[in-house]
Length: 305
Image 1: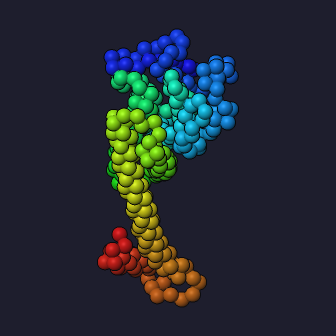
Image 2: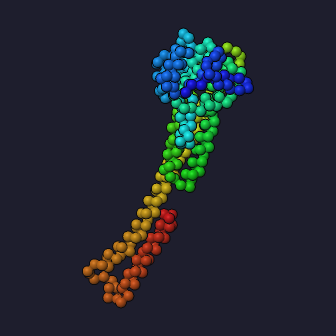
Image 3: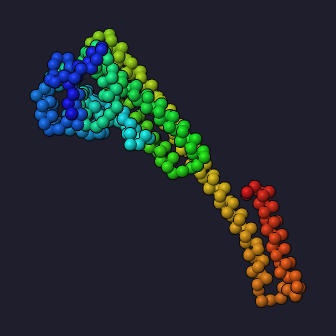
């Protein structure tokens, strides 16, 4: 899908053909669409291949007729509210336009489309980076709330489903941490080498990107630590609960064994006490009950129950 857009302070206009200072947004292009794009920008095949790789790392490279960037953007899988991951977005900056190209759905481009600002190529690029960093912060806040909700659920019942949700979140935080660090290195390189920085406003925007990216990295570290501690705590709780159950079952087994032992002894074909008494059965039952009560009392004092 190819969109040709023109951003202004008032509206986002869809154009029928490219013009100077426009934004071309391309998602999962077909071979025919790639052929059309190559008439606008001669994109090398290896760059298209790199964008298809969901693990591609952020980079910035200068070519003869354009600058090429890759950033990693966050995505929340709507099929699973607890699954977050990151995907690459390619950016091509020419003398006349900006082209964004990606093969995997992301949540940053739709948010950028809703923003209104005076169009400049560098402004669009830095707004894209800033929107991505802020979306990471938004998703990290959501993740924190979900961790808290799962903790509350686990206090009532240690179900495997809740544990698996925590593991999904832990995996998401690893993706976020890796991508944020890579994006941070890219942003710092842009600032240090003054790539694409044309005005004071550009400088302020890239500084904001770096600051918010660092904040997101720190939040990711914090929530990862909280999650690891939570998983360790619940592993200890589950182990402790298992020990309690095993102690209870051991106590019950011993208590049941007392009347079984007495009944086995009085089942022998030898001379036994009270065997000639008409109250023999009652006496044996009373002895068994006394043994059971004594065992129950001992275990109660030892806090086995």
